[in-house]
Each structure stands twice: as structure tokens, then as C-alpha cells.
Image (cartoon, rainbow over all chains, first blue to last red; front, top):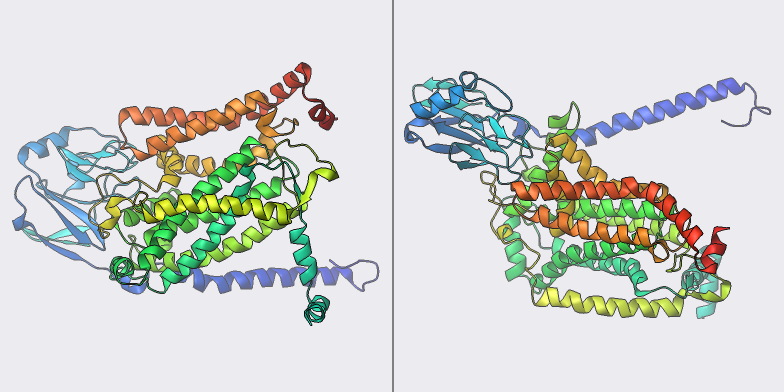
Length: 167
Length: 398
């Protein structure tokens, strides 16, 4: 702060200087918040969109991709053999297949690679991400890196035997 | 009349002083054509600004109309195709020129004291250029645009604790969407002007420490010549040569550097079978892919760009002229360049077991070059002093 010898009460001046600086910086931070926050997802984006899916049209072994909140969701109709295989398999992030499905015939996962957000392509016995080579099994569990996690299971519920609501 | 007007201005604003200072800026007379690329980058920056502003008069930053507005520019707008091809080719040219400009700095060791700040402001400019190019690439709203932006914004998922929130904040949506496109457009418009400001800082630093020269030696006064007319002419020759190459791309093969998949409108439900970034990001992308862990990959990629800033401290040799008088440094420089091409190749091809191994080895070579430089440069200096150097170089060490 300013010179100490020719000033009356230098401690007070220093104190006032410090308080002004703190208040100024604090004020600037508070004033910046509306600008920063304006870049967050807006109300219409946040409004919790749900997606209803009719499962009747998906044949056994078939997969449909539906949009939920702008994200692709994979719905896989698995057959008995695939279900049995999935219940035995061990993967990088081990989670039992039962914990990832509500009805073992139907696998519902968000189709976004947990590595960098590409949409994996359907391959034999699972999915393969073309971007960086990650692989997932028929339970959406990662079997080959670099993806760090299994495909996310979105919140959904069966509203009837062959209809689900995601979200 | 003219003299009186000038005098009137000079009393109020240092116009004559400024023009004189710029024109008479003392420049080493032994500069080679490798020293052309700084001013050439300035020319390209102006071209990008002009074509960009005219494109902005026809472009629409809305996901419903963005892709079509590009087609409108290409088909309907008078000379719209020229504006767009100049702008898209110019982006690639900008990186090519900046990379050559950087390679020259590396080869001649121009980053060393007292030019650290010149080097660092240049680094800042590179980061700004990368950000600007990345955001501009989203605007055509093609498949490559979309998935490039999706992957790069996803990198911020590696942020500790707040990964998800940061990604959503950057996008303004859960996925790359309308909010993302509009803000990228706003920032793509803003950043070039920040770049202009940063270029001024870069130039002020340059005029303070003066240009380096191929010998790296402190030159005698008789070897310093004014910038104008000698280097204004020489730079113009360079601009002429550049415009010939530029024109070949713009007028004959404008689509070489545009991925075919980007002529398909963005589809958030379907990633293209093979996504690649623009060529100027390939080596860094290869480093990202070479680390089998998300956070590790992101850190490695960030470091691969930022590590250049440490060079003034990593290079401990006092021998002037960079690679000119230093055979080991020269060898390292060329190994680094070749390695960069290898990384570029790895970044461009789909990931297979073989390319992943090549990428990992190349990543190690990349960082190894920086890691070993302090020891190598010191050992090399001792060896060269013992073996003997040209008298002028020896004198500069005293």
C-alpha cells in the first residue's frame, strides 16, 4: 500500500485497501455468475422429457435405437441363449447381468460410449465403438478398453408387458 | 498541408514515431526464407477474418438451418463458394504456416533467452488458433462436425469431481445441440479478435528482443538492416509463392481437406464408422488414443501441446544457432519431425492392435525427446566445446 511514513494511521489505510480489494473481487465473482450460469442447460432442455417405447415391434435378437433427451438409447431383445451367456460372463467392470435389466429379455442402455461419447455400432455379441475401439457385450458391459465404464442404464419402467417409459 | 496535418496529429498521437519505428525495425540481414512465416501467418489471419465476416452474413447458427445455409452459400450466394473454400482452405493453411513457424523456432533454438516470452505468447496464440478452428469446424453441422465436437467436449469429463457438470455447461445441453452450435458460433466470431490482440503482444515482444537469425549470434550493427524496404519486399515474395499454392487448393482441389462424411447432416443417433479430426489435430489425437485411460489420455494430450513452453528450460545448451552448430540437437529435431508424421498416420487410421502399439511407441518417443533434452544438451555442449566450434560461436560463449 502507500508509503508508511507520511501517512496517518497506515494500518487503517492498509485495512481499507484490503477490504476494498476483497469486496471488489467478490463483487466481480458474483456479477460473473449469471453469465457463467447462462451457459448451463436451459429450462426447456432440463424439462424432464420421457420417451415411451412400444416393445412389440422389436423381434427377438433385434435392436432398436430410440431418442431420449436427445441421447440414443439401445433396446435389445435378447434370446435365451444370449441371456444365459451374459449371466456367466465376467467383464472389466464386473456387474451381474441381473442388476442391469428388469426383464432379462430386454436390455435398455444409453448408447453413448463411456469413453468419449460416440455411439457404438451393433456388432456380433455386443457393440463396438468405431471411434477408439471400445467393445461392449450384450449386457452393455465393457469388454475391451479404452472405455472406463459399462454403458449407462437409464431409469425406465414397464407400464405394461410390452411398453416401457424411459426417464 | 500534408506536413501541417501530420504535425497536428503527431502532437496528439505518436503516428510518425510509430510508422518510423515499424519501418526502421532493425532486422538481421542473414534471415532465410524460413523467417517469412510469421508475417505470412498475419496475412492468412487477415484473409480468414475477411472471408469469415462475409460468410457470417449468410450463415445461420441454428441446428435446423445451419447445414442448409452452407449449401445456400455454396449454390446461391454470389461467390459464396469462393468465400467458403478460401475460409476452409485458409484454416488448414493457417496451421501449416504456424507449424512451419514453430519448426523454424525449434530448429534454430529461437525460443531460448531472451525470447521466452515471445515463445510463450506464440504458444498462447497456438492454443487460441486450435480453439477457434475447433469451434469453427462445428458450424457446417455435418457428421464430422458433430462427432468431433461431441468427442472433444467429452474430454472435459476427465475433470475431477465435476466432469459431468462441466461437459453439460460447455454444451448447454446433455448432448451437442442447438445451444452448443450457437455459442460456438458466437465464440468463433469473437476469438479471432482476441487473436489479433495477442498478435500485437507477440509483436511488441518481438520488437523488444528483436528477431533471431540463422547463426544465433549477436550481430554487429552493419549486419542489421531496416525492415522496410528489405523485408517488406522479401515477405511479399513469400506471400506471392503462398498465394500460388493456396490458389491451387481453393480453385482445383478445395475438397481435399474436407472429410466426405461432413457432407451428411449431423445425426446424433449415428456415429460415422470412422471418425477422424482435421489433419492438424491428428498427432495430438493419436497421443490421446495411445493412453488406455480416459483421464490419462486427456492429460497426455494437453501436455503434448503445452510441453513446448518448457523448452527454454529443457534446452540447457548455450551454443548459439540451435541445430546449426549442434549435430545431436539436429538429429533429435528430425527424429521429432518424423515421429510427428508417424503420430499423424496413427491418428488418421482406425484403431487396430498394430497401430495402437505404433502409437504408444511414438508417444514415448515424443515425450522422451523433451525428457532427455536437458541431459543431451548439456553433454553435447561439453563435447562440442572440447572438439572445437567456429571462432564466433566460441566467442559468444564467453
